[in-house]
Image (cartoon, rainbow over all chains, first blue to last red; front, side, top):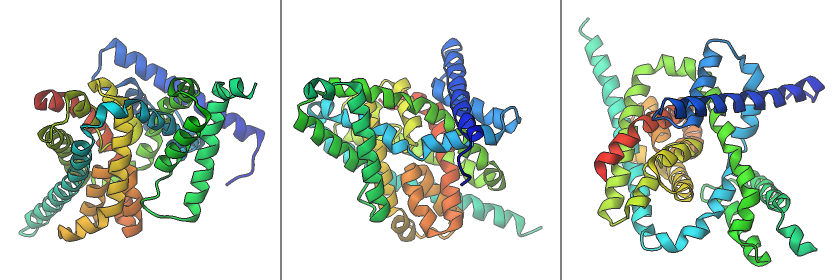
Length: 130
Length: 231
């Protein structure tokens, strides 16, 4: 990792402004057109599109994105602490929730992998005669 | 004076960040799948709040400022999606087939099983997006009208579980394709599972990583319709 420079510090800050700009635009579009995607996700797609179209260079946002994404767990602590406020309400349901989460995770893994494997096999077989 | 200081958002934010950094350092030293930094840090913060006699409502004043950063963090997921683009293009068919199948299976199986076991409507809406990465899951749950705290817990549990058993499940199911193993783990259990897929092999890790954001987007597009139909 490069040493700190004033330029880098400014870039990190600009990257943050770019992310907020995308989020704001995304939220506006989502609300204005009543989109099914939440504003943050529209913002994600706008950033992706801006990167693909080279309107924004990867270098402009990469480090700020890393700063947030690599410390994402910290950002979830307050919401997770808030779980304590709804514990009484989910007391009767937590077992159903846990069983559902665990079973579904296994089901999704197996079904997804099987389907992908099947589609690969189909492609190979289709290629064989030619 | 100390008592009023403890009630300042400044203290709540400092507490959260310091606990996170300490837990994360500890995690770097002792890597163990059940030892999840988010859950341990949450437990420590809860304990300190309880010990200091601070209500959640007071804590949330500072906490909300941290939660605000989840917005730009969600947008930031555009960066890994962009970096994965060559990888996604090279395996477009496998990834799209896997992600769409997996996202639908995830929504339907989660809601169906929990409903069969007697979970209420609000809870069902709060866990439908459990296979997507956390910031996206939070956005989807907002649209569905579920509870933000339940989905954060559900996503964390899914990630820990996927990371713990992903490799074994794939072996038991007899999946041989490395691409299929990666997409399966990433679609089912986002970054939590991917941390394990990376250790199975390079192909598994990169495929799992490529599936994360796409699963989030596909689930966001489909969940409102599927959930309406299931509940």
